[in-house]
Image (tube, rainbow, N blue to C red; front, side, top):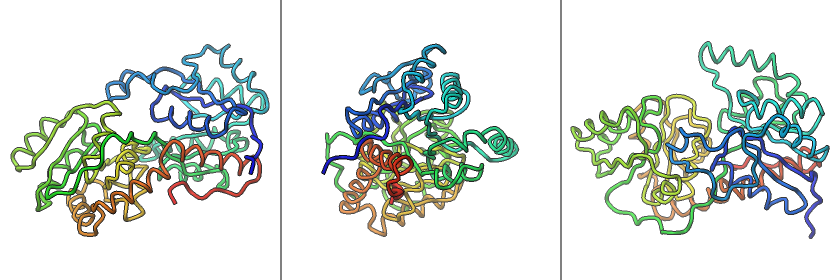
Length: 376
């Protein structure tokens, strides 16, 4: 059976920066639509220095066709060249001149566009101000947007709460390249291997790790990938508590993906909102289970108990209980690990995301059935 005719001849992704968490997905979209649709990326800047410090690299590997830091004239030319059969996908609608300039031209010329974004932070007084700002300033966007790709557990509720029509809002994720099959996952042994990846800060819940490990009641090793203000404190607490701990510092993304094969459980226990948490996807595609707070956007994947557990923020005992429960339930067995790995790769890979994106496009523009949520 022949594939249906493309609904667009061009798709442009407008990004704040060059990102390894988007490049594989954009390339997969190009592959999915084929040569009849030109797919490209426009980035406000290259990989920021602070992101390079977190292991992002220079972004040169597998980069889709990309224009970086365009002038206003170049932005206008890109929109004009796209014409009426171009879909513009904006990763955000504020703060970055390249995106706001392009979005203004797209709206003025009534070109087709979509939004791909994490939710805005809506806690406290500042969150209330953001909520009011969105209601008051996004009326034209709400009327004209073709669809919204709302990232993470809190993405869809946010966009619906500020007036975007329910039928135009779709849950979304950061879809990543599948890890290379360089090694097999480690065999089970008597020692649990627990990983934490991220900044060693209180906002990320890093101060809860040693107390949680101390109460496990069985041999376990904690590996911390990342750096931050709490490193010395965590090291001292681990030494005093007799918790076996490995500090790796910041590692390149590729090395993080490889190391995931070594771990039974990833712990990501932010006490503030985290839009998605790409390391959750990396862990699950390597077969590891995950313990995360509901603030982590990717915690929506853990509503399936085979994948992990959601714990309340700030509670080290809940982390301990979740890890023990995962082991007692058999969720850390080799069979469960393999099943989790297959589940994740079928739903969270760049190619899976491109397929889901295409289904959304064809639903909204060509009347195809609405796709089921990517994580189901």
